[in-house]
Each structure stands twice: as C-alpha cells, then as structure tokens.
Picture 1 (cartoon, rainbow, N blue to C red):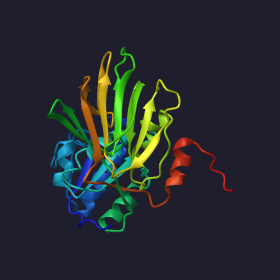
Picture 2: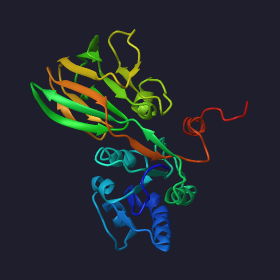
Picture 3: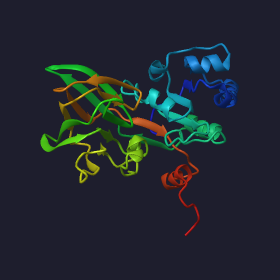
Length: 292
C-alpha cells in the first residue's frame, strides 16, 4: 500500500445493532489490544457503548488514516462522498447484504485490518465523479460521488426531455424517464438494474444508461473519463430530480444544466485478498460457480 502509515482508524457502523454489534465489539477490542487509536462515528459510538473520540461521519477522513465501514454499500457511499477533501482508504466489511463495495467478510476483517496496518493490503484506486448543477449562470449545487449521478422524474411526473453533450459535442436529445451516468464502480448499482453493462473497476469512463427511453434504439453508451458529460433539461412536465449515489440531490427545472466530470480525487478501497472481481460477481449475482 502506497499511502501514509496508519496511526488512527475511523469506524463507521450501520445503525442496526443485530448485524454490526458483534463485529464492532471485536474490532474495538482488537484495536484496543494493539494500542491503535480509533475514532467512532455517532452510530458506532451508540452501538459500542464505550468511551472514546467521536466524529461526524463526514469528518472521519480528516481525522483518520483508514476508515472501517461496518454495514453495506450505502454506509460506505456516505463516507466516500467526503473523500474529495482527503484520500483515505476504506475497508468495507459486509454484514450480509448484497454489497459490491463492502466486499470484506466479517471473517476477513481482522486479517485485512492487520494487512492495512502492516502496509500489505490490496488497495484499489477508484474513479469518482464531480457533478455541478447550474441554473441560469449560477452553480447552485455541487456533488461528489463514487457510483452514479441520476436525473429522473418524480413518481407522478411524465417523461421529460434532456439534451446530452459529451466532450462539448451534441450526442442526442432524448425523451425518457431519466438518465444514469455511472462509473465502473457504480456499474453494478442502479445501472445494472436498468439494463446497463457491468464494467470492471479500473476502466475509467462514464456509462450513460437511459431510463425507459421513448426511442427504443437508445442504448447504454460508455465514453472516456476525459470527456465531460453535459445534460440540460429541455422540457419537463412534473418533478425532476438530480441525485448523487442515491443519497443526496436537488430538484431540477427546465433550463437547468448538469456538468459531470471526473473528480480530481479518487476513492481508495481495500479489497479482499482471497477473491478476485470475477469471483465477487459469481458470489453476489449467483452466476454459475463451477470450474470449467
């Protein structure tokens, strides 16, 4: 691992104690015995019921050198959004849900943590997105995300029209229920459910996946990460929302513009040393696992 030595570990936990509590107790006990300082997010502090430093989840990257996430992909994504301020590796421990980001099992947690402290962990650098919403001449919101940016309609709205440009070149005007712009990491999230392709992490690009397009020949498209994606809401007949990683967002109106670029900062994920990405796909998606 090429990043700086780990002196303080951050811990973020899913609030449901039934899954996180045993792993949290084991983790806190192990760090205490090793004399490694740690900082808990508020959910982890409530579960651990122990004294020690506590910081809000989005403050952990500035106070720690490694963040252990006990939960699912949603918990990890909430941490990843704040990593544009400081690149800190994340060790995601899966507590039983369908997680592609939290790929470390509870049995692997302590060996993976030991490898991190010894500088021997397998850490992957993942591309992230920066998304800016412009209304008129004013940038009214900026989001950083790991998985995807989605523009879609509200529950009772009709399909709307957007104009899409890639690298300053007009791609198309499209009437649809919306559009997903995903990273390779996010290809197995909403993009996969919408019929988009699975893209192996490390291939940097934007995946553009239409949501129920009016023109049936519209299909997902992958473009290079060096080409910014620009989207304008041309016409809407109801509520339209911009969301980042499905967790934060902003309402949009006709005339609003969205500019999506590759973030200048990456997200560092500690990956399992006992399985590769294709083994992860077989495990999570239930693909045939028999040997050829």
